[in-house]
Length: 48
Image 1 (cartoon, rainbow, N blue to C red):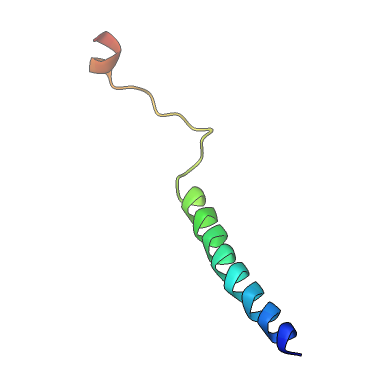
Image 2: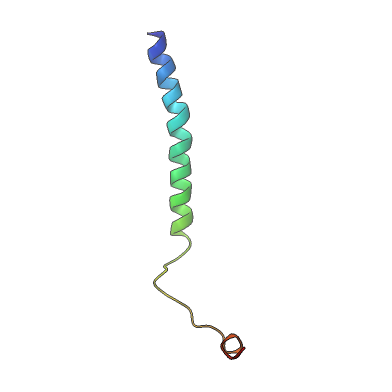
């Protein structure tokens, strides 16, 4: 049984931070906005 508990805690130690990183990156990418809408450039940049 010793190895069962050890394997369980190792899995928790690896999967929990990984899941936290995935959730963080998903929220970060979701907050960037839609890439399908492009804002027009200001006129001074277009002339320059």
